[in-house]
Length: 340
Ligand SMILES: NC(=O)c1ccc[n+]([C@@H]2O[C@H](COP(=O)([O-])OP(=O)(O)OC[C@H]3O[C@@H](n4cnc5c(N)ncnc54)[C@H](O)[C@@H]3O)[C@@H](O)[C@H]2O)c1
Image (tube, rainbow, N blue to C red):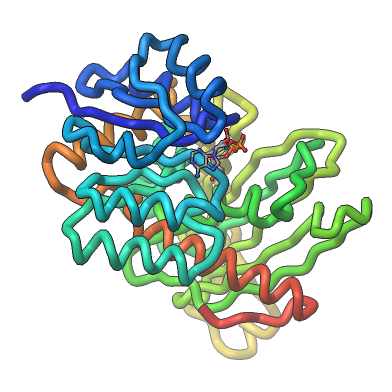
């Protein structure tokens, strides 16, 4: 099979990572770098020997050898660009979040389904070996039934001008949650509170809670104003518990053979909280160090070639967008639970 032709639209902060990884992917050829800022597109293309440089999406879409378009422009532009690509018969890889609002995200995935086009959402974390292992562990039942997901994603971050801390950071947790929960466990409601201590016009600190259909709960703590960087997720199950510390490369994942049970107790014993605890061994599985975006590039190319849905398809992007939208509405209402 020949090389799969790829175009990357958007050469700002994230686009160069996509160009680098598609250029390194042995089955892909980057045919175009497109950006409204032509000089920026030219500089990026030059670094990887890409000959197609343009500020015109029309020119990219007219190239019959382009099969997939990777879109790394601001979220508000994703809908228009993605729909034009689909109309031109191309498959699309869209950066997170899928779109700036649910309506435009839904329009993309419905249009793609009708046209038989592939939509992949770049939920980058889902392609890390840590999240792959967490998915296997949770969905494979090693933790028992799924009880909670508790994430702290804080650092002294770049305060964004166009999005709040929820839209900046929560896509990571929402996409991981979507990827790892067992089939049949779905979000039921979202509530969010936040604050804007700097007066930038949107939340810089936020706490988001998602309730799940099996009674499990997910909580995400997001903060751009933390003096330290923490990237930690704890996942509780009925049989084991898991801690993922992404700032600890030598031991990212620890699985604790620890449980808290109340067994087969009478109503009175339950009220008296006669909980028994079992504290067992901890194992830290070895994980291969792979660049997640290399896996993203490979997954997109393989989905194009084999006409199959990618692991994080457009519908996954739409589910994440629905949670983001609900979190924003809850924030505006002072923390009311919004059904999803
Ligand atoms: N997967 C991740 O972890 C991750 C990380 C960072 C950013 N992102 C996502 O990547 C996307 C881009 O973010 P960024 O930080 O690179 O933005 P950016 O503002 O740095 O770059 C965007 C680029 O797109 C260009 N552009 C805008 N509209 C265009 C159009 N209609 N046609 C062609 N080019 C256009 C701009 O000129 C700019 O060069 C966003 O969706 C963002 O959320 C994802």
